[in-house]
Length: 415
Ligand code: SF4
Ligand code: SF4
Image (tube, rainbow, N blue to C red):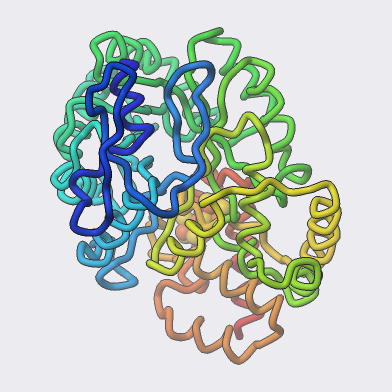
């Protein structure tokens, strides 16, 4: 195990040699133990007191480039370019899930990552979906995931999206026990869960299996820190000795495009920094954060993120005060705190909920009603007028948004 982790930590990049200068590194025993890419590398964090060093930035595979914006099919050409670039920079943690890209994200892992890189050169995380409703579903889904990802094991594996309902289901089907068995069989290296609910439920899940989780994945960013109790969640996990993997560090991209007033505060303090960089630096400044996931869609997202994390620099106290001021300015402008996580989809009537909320928020920031009305009309049947207020989406929203009511507001503003 130690040797495997060490090799991953140093990045086995022989497969990248056409793209990078590589050189051999000698181990204490004089053997060649790895090859390391020269040049800019992502800052790494140690997993507890082991030799495992993980990249502080992880590649979320839920928003990969698509062939067409309204279809889940992934653009393999651009996707592969991004994977190659990420690996070259030492960004070798990939986070997928059973239903990302309608199941095509795990296939992308198999076709593009496992097929082109030695398995020991990257970390792979996937998740058991809450749609596993019977004990028989668990091995069926798990084996399907292994097969799609073309791997024999997951480095990190999670019970996906724990909330009141999914936790009750997980207990009912003995999900944890099944996954623990997979861990004992070597098919899972580190076992955890992802979480979207209250600090009270988080404490309950942690207490259910003391010392039983290797990590947990929570939504954490400077906007949610106080407002949606990320701080409490972070503290519960830290106290329990559970390292944190962060999702939504940019709150679905919203923290990358703040309103002009908030952006100006950040720009005045640090002219060369982007809004996204400030948001990442807030999260990475927390010592119990192990990996920060970013769902990157375009090569430029990846390049910008690499420049933030290679190397990473934590926020100073003075910078933290600046960020607090920007947050106050931003909160004044944001209408709907949607993170674009897409858990509310699919709507049986085709309503594209996160897109509508994003357009509405943009309108509230820019005041451009013409643009809102135009995009609304262009969405056709996917717009808010197709909503029949069945309430299905509302039960799935981790942000507890009253989606049908908010859609009425969007429709009114766009008319
Ligand atoms: S409440 Fe509206 S948007 Fe939500 S699932 Fe039902 S029809 Fe779709
Ligand atoms: S409405 Fe809720 S579930 Fe849907 S994308 Fe936004 S935050 Fe996620």
